Image 1 (cartoon, helix red, strand yellow):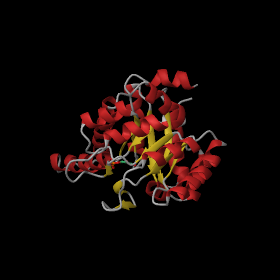
Image 2 (cartoon, protein in one colour):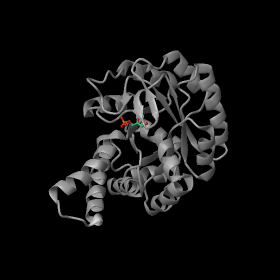
Image 3 (cartoon, helix red, strand yellow):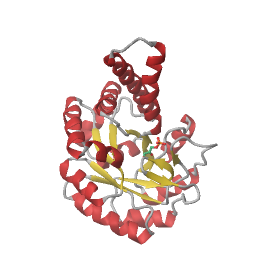
Image 4 (cartoon, helix red, strand yellow):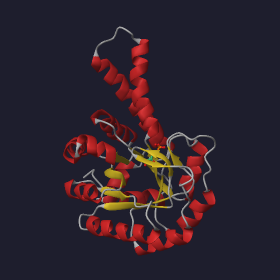
Length: 292
Ligand code: 13P
């Protein structure tokens, strides 16, 4: 069975010191390109739907795309909810078949974040669904969630330790200086904080805001305990630019399928590059065997 929860997936990635790439699909073809890229790289992959994408297509449609694609391959594939803030949406993901969900209550006071996350974990546990939660607040723009620079703040390591002691998370999104969207200036990634949180919690960490981080920075974050790297903005740019570039290069082409083919291939190349950069290549079939 290729559909897996992020919980065993990321434990294995963390143990073996690589990260699983997590991409946000925007349509059927981009979702398919992620899963085919993973298969071609023999790598695990996380398909993470944003709340905005779920509102646009609906849970059932997204799951009806995902399930047959995931069953077609023999690498581990997780369907994850990215930055879930609406508890009804989260519940429906769990009921319909998402293999993991993120509850993002990071804008709430710590105790409230802890309480809400515990509640989500209690629903998720009944279905073997893994949970991601965030503390601190990651800056930038992620779909409808906008966190201004002055509101973004780093995770507190004491709170991180307590959070992960009280809750058995699949993956922990602690704010460590990255931001969603392209960076304005040099990203100020707090490597010491990643190391301290990882040592004190032992929970695999998610690196949000993967777009625009250079390879060396990402490699350091993975070595320090990040087992999931999120890429969204980058793929949105490739999605649009590949389409527009095809028109510029072929001004008289009005065959939609040639545009879609170019777009699909460009996306697949991006996904394969990122999967390889994060170290997932060649790990898929072996991980699947270990989980099942
Ligand atoms: P980017 O949009 O910067 O790639 O970040 C994606 C992300 O972290 C989704 O949660």
